[in-house]
Length: 316
Image 1 (cartoon, rainbow, N blue to C red):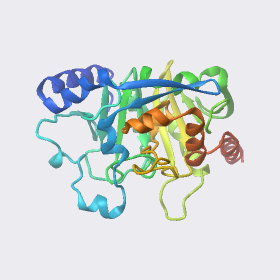
Image 2 (spheres, one colour):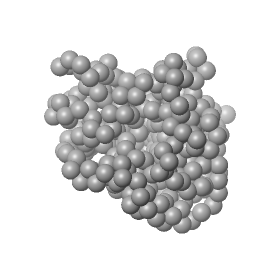
Image 3 (cartoon, rainbow, N blue to C red):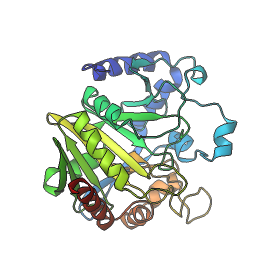
Image 4 (cartoon, rainbow, N blue to C red):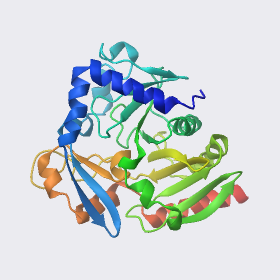
């Protein structure tokens, strides 16, 4: 699956699709007019974007009955006629027709397979290295994925997000190493964040497997709840892991003065909260964001305990 110029090919695909697919072209042009503001959360800058087109994702029904009732929009046979893709191993790079980023891609597995990261973190890391300048991200099936029935990644230009910069080297506290891979906790964040830095995807995959096994395992057999962001960093790759406790916050909804149509996923936790409703864009405050993060994410103390468990398991 090696393709060092994948980012160039992907950008060529984006330009071609915007010229030949009117709906996608219109949605990307609309990004120039979206409202964005910044919120300081104890020294960490987060952005809020008012993006009405994203209601298809934030408001998606992901219960089993709803998923069964609709055709899978990531399967090749169900995609719009205008949508073309770029093959990459067992995946296909597609432009996302409902963008958040100025350059936004969805990368589904070719086979219709449930959203699961086990056995695929190496794919994600290799993809991030090939897509230099982009962050590849993964939303767990109960962590913001609007298509939990079809395995997929997404990617967007890294400079759009604020978390990669906030989780800088000065905030990292190394916990354990496996080969060239290092697991660290991140200090000073409003939620618990773990980072794996690796020189190779293989070493990163080994350390992630140990982390995966140390996260709380749901009793229903689902994978541990998490959001992942991955990008090339120096001569290697960096994986940001944000363990989750809950799918959606208690304020989730579109009716009533106390509700907000906010379903946090990797982009939101990566520093850009997406609000498809203008009332939520205007009402969102630093305190409300902290409340949402406290509900859906682990605390820094909890992820430190996870890092300790990884170290203890490896050192046995």
